Image (cartoon, rainbow, N blue to C red; front, side, top):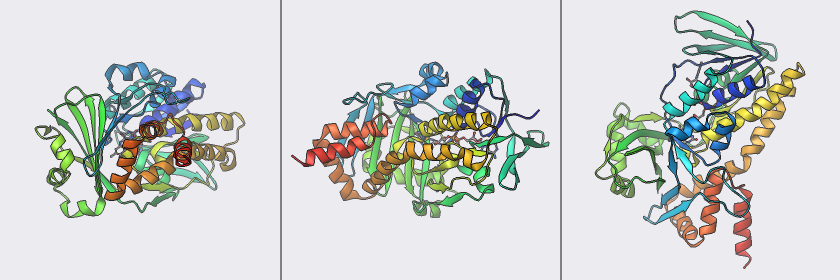
Length: 400
Ligand SMILES: Cc1cc2nc3c(=O)[nH]c(=O)nc-3n(C[C@H](O)[C@H](O)[C@H](O)COP(=O)(O)OP(=O)(O)OC[C@H]3O[C@@H](n4cnc5c(N)ncnc54)[C@H](O)[C@@H]3O)c2cc1C
């Protein structure tokens, strides 16, 4: 049986796309090489706006039952100055929830996939897509191999790539490009860290930064991001490198003193890459398959869910008109870029700040003096304050 839409990858972006398409009455086939629940290297933070999308997907209640609440963030500058900001309404901007959340990816992704299972979606786990079926300027479907090593050719008018950072679809269409930001993340869980409260904690110490995110009572996700080149000589000795690196981040080391690492370190890098827009018809891309910059601003899952919403709007219209040409689908890419463009500028500027010790210290001093600016920044990072509000605030203050 041919589906209307084939989705490659059942992470947050793919699962959300499947849920929304099924709710529109389209027939959907969702493929993932993994069997769920499955782990995923991630900082496991959800912004205060992510619940809006999870609510729309019918998944928020289940997420609420297992997620930890984060009232705000504590940010420690290289000189030890600590800023504390909470998620709260600022002027006209209100977050969907006045808190962010921490939840393991094993749990979050399983909740979304369970929601998929409750709908009439042909969901196939342990089915790895190995290639695309392309004819002329059109993607016609995929080649896949299932858990019993059987090969399948699956066709649909529309294929949606939600296969994350190693996207087979992006590779096959020649869209993936390297990024000059060459960083690596090392992620683990720590326990017995004193005073783990309802705050995420960021430690900026150029060229590194680290994030402590309390995902469960007594347990925190600890992610340390370092230049990729610094990790190369330690190949095969990741745990040793991680422990040594943490010792060189004095504020983090002090913070987690007495705590212990309870899982092996997992690494991912290079973190940043770009993906060009497909020029081929019959295909859309969502989530990390469209590119990734850096996990500092913790927006990957939100962006993935948001891109699913936008892709579904375009997909429903295009399939309704029986036109899935590249031209008919181009509106999605424009909408997605527009939705993320301004925040991308903020996150790129932040990367410059956190990459330079003096600049990071100056920024921390400025933000300590201007709590409204700090709240606005947290609101932008939390996806409920438009990035231009930052500029307006900086500009208005500098006139007096
Ligand atoms: C170190 C690190 C920390 C991060 N921290 C955060 C954070 O705190 N908060 C946040 O919001 N974001 C964070 N992110 C980003 C976030 O993890 C991603 O943006 C998010 O997972 C994207 O979701 P996705 O569905 O696009 O891709 P994924 O979650 O990667 O899902 C892709 C799915 O596709 C499947 N797949 C892949 N290839 C194939 C294939 N060939 N055939 C079939 N299936 C396939 C995979 O099994 C997987 O299930 C972080 C990223 C990194 C690297």
